[in-house]
Image 1: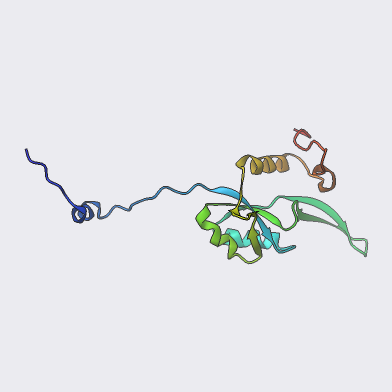
Image 2 (image 1 turned 180 degrees about the vertical axis):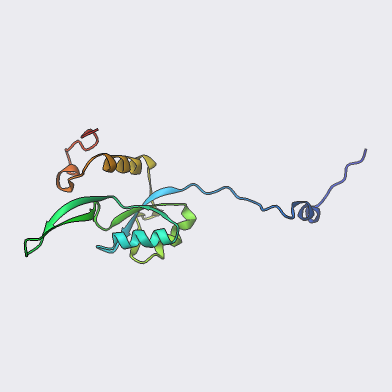
Length: 146
C-alpha cells in the first residue's frame, strides 16, 4: 500500500463548492455617544444598517407655555445609546449619522457586560422609571419593585 501526498492544488478541487466559514466573532454591548437630542434618529440609522441597538427611555409629562400637557418619551441617558456589535462592525456604527463615538478609554472602545444591559431591559420593562430619583446615588434601584 502506497500513500500519496495531495498538495494544495488538489485541495481546491476537493473543496470547490464549499464555502470556508470562519467562526462568527463574538458580539458585545458598547455605549455609543450621539449628538444631543439625536438618540432616536441614531438608533433608527443603526437599525437601517442592521445593527442591534438599545435606547432606554422613560415617559414624562411636559407642560408647555400655553398649559398644554404632552407625554414625551425621553432617553434615560441623554446623548447615549447602546449597540450590540462585533469589533469589526465598529465602522457601521461610526459612519451612522448622529453618532459621535463609541465610548472607551485611550486604548479603544470598552465593552459593557451583557448583564448590565439585560438588567436595564428587564427593569425598564417591569417598572416605570422616574429619572429624577431612581438613578441618584444611594437609591436602591435594583431592589425596588422587583
